[in-house]
Length: 340
Image (cartoon, rainbow, N blue to C red; front, side, top):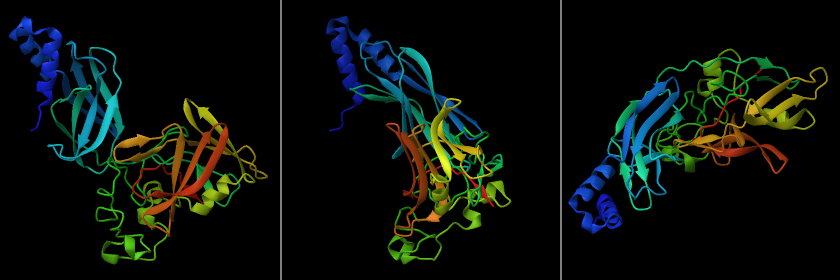
């Protein structure tokens, strides 16, 4: 038997209010729960998406409650692809959540929610469509005396401390839902790859090819910045992180954590780039922001081709960590271009 959460909550409220207060209090409590949360709307400005909601509750059940938003690809919310909880202290307040959007022109659905230990209540469902325009600013080339010059900021950024945008490996537009179901080069899973697959186990119907680096048309640096810009190779990240070549200093720049990388090469001393700890995206979530930076290379991880090489950098207990590792191709990572 399915139990209606609202009924359970009303029973609790009735007990708290006292049965002798009559039906009027019960009706008032029901109205409060029905009006507990409202989805106000969605505002889109470029790649920034702001979800807005409102809650209003003064009944005794309003203890230890939370509010937030849920995202789905269907208006019936059969599957929730993202849940963004927020901390709120006031009894009556509007709340908002700002997310990085997408340039793929996709339609999604959002609803506000309010929850405590007894029940969850939802606002109305609103639809929104992501933008289709994407024209990022091109950075400057910084010569550190290495085999390539490094860009002054990330793709999608305006200055070095900006995080920029997040991309799956091999796609040239930012996403909103970073998952295998949305990935361009598969049929819905890590074992149905349709490009960059050197092992038949991971290929769709046994598909394989010999591609181990991104084609220019799949390299966001080349496609969106033009010229000779491209994503770095694994070896170029290894060269950058070699302590013989550069000093790495964990620092905060205009409130943003990251690494200041300064050349030690003769004739290039003092030349530097800043790599912000932008985290990574999975589904609609943004993870480890301010703690770890993840930067795509254009090199496939050949042992398991659903992975690619990523450069990660973070500071832990006053110890520096920066190295290349394998990462799922559908994770959304930042991109720092290079050029000759």
